[in-house]
Image 1: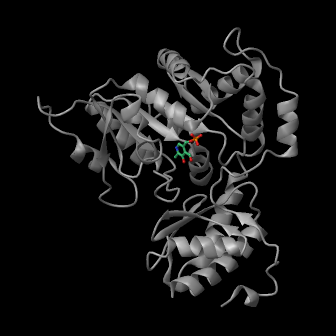
Image 2 (image 1 turned 45 degrees about the vertical axis):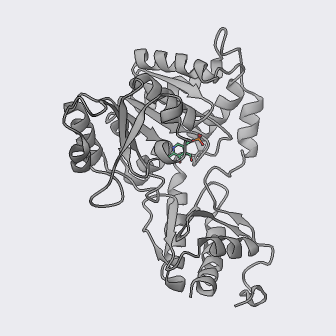
Image 3 (image 1 turned 180 degrees about the vertical axis):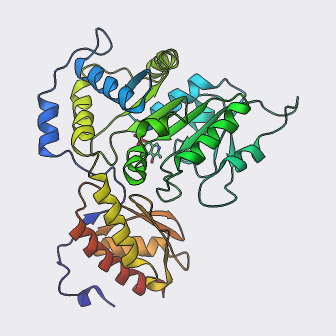
Length: 356
Ligand SMILES: Cc1ncc(COP(=O)(O)O)c(C=O)c1O
């Protein structure tokens, strides 16, 4: 079917960007909150709005202290830097963000090797997989120093690891004497979708990273939360990595606004993701991983990902290619249900045209 035969109810100027939930732009109200933020020099005396954000995040996660970071990647790496020492290894899921998408900072910044835990059942590693991957102590093998978890799991299509399983993972790590860091860039989504409190999830880890620039719609920023002494060390790591900020309250105000106004509405993104999944599952032989939250992974019958992404873009719908046989669509604040429904129709047609 050529673009000229697009169904008449699909606007010719249809444009929707579902590459990531990071593409959102700050709303007018968020920009106003940023403009009105009370600020100070965070490197010198402290910035009052940043302090307020850190206090709110620590309280919600049930941790002693939280620290604002420019990005989730930097917060993850600061946590890894604090928990590990060079020449040791961390254990993480085979598809973990800290392993795949942080340009080997684990090795480059922390001098640490990653040992991948492959899930034996389901999309994300479980306690039994972690236990099976831990090595017996040996003079020939690197010592483990950290377990990294991710919830929701981006590479597994926004999958939620339920709190019971997360506790079991923590217990295996504790038995082995290892601290746990949780990459919770989308922990907000896990909490809203499952009804489990943020604090219950956070209790399964020593340190937790949460991001504001994804579902919450802020332009930038993350927090690392944990015990005061560990976060004090992470403050030093942030400085070393170049992440000291001055009037950071302008950014923290956006995060505070997102936390206050955009948290509960994540349920809308989850509903939109389910609608998209239902619309495209089976089209052109594609199979959709049923979404737990806001990430829709579409497995293609052939390695035609590049063609699907460019054919969709030609019709105004932006997706990202995960690999040659998988494309990803992510719902977010700037993707209201009616546009996602339209996107589902466009994508189903594109899949029929491109994959058959
Ligand atoms: C699971 C996960 N962790 C960490 C990050 C990194 O966050 P940032 O882009 O703020 O560095 C991302 C970004 O998409 C992510 O999806």
